Image (cartoon, rainbow, N blue to C red; front, side, top):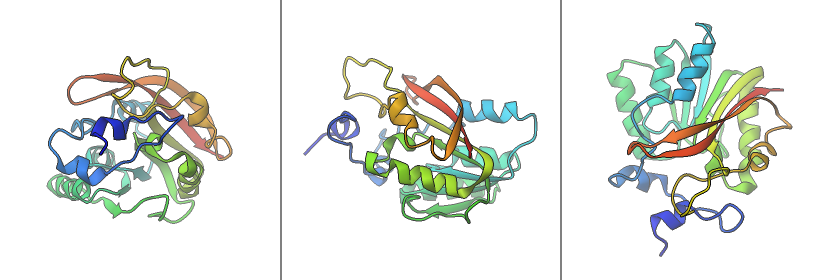
Length: 216
């Protein structure tokens, strides 16, 4: 049986990684991305809007709900997807404690879309796109694009292959710029592509892509 690092870090040019997200959210210290703090890239993007926040928002892979609740606190009507039941239940509990109405869906967006086509003003994912199987990336992008109104934006944070690792079996999945953008460009204009970092709850940093796309 493969250990967890081997499962998470098979090279993207070879064997693809396999994931059990429910297991990650039920085992101690197995979800280092879940810091309990809103994503800095999301905060930065909203700050750039100068109060003109999107009304209808889709978050793909909401985890325990931190970013969804943060967006709801900024007046957004948030719909989320998540495939780990334990994470979803934690998100619902946190939203109830925060007295925020969020439309949670325990679904895989590659199989089911939780919103009507062409209705959303903004989409967000942090660390979801980079775990999608290569064969399904185009479908994932199509689903996100279908949910958005033309001209709307998608902010996506993904692991960056420009980071050299002495041990490639440590850290989030990594995509090259070509791997990142090839499925994107038929549906989205690339507005911004910058480097950022995943900062894990133990303080470790891993290089990431911060990408802002606009629906064609």
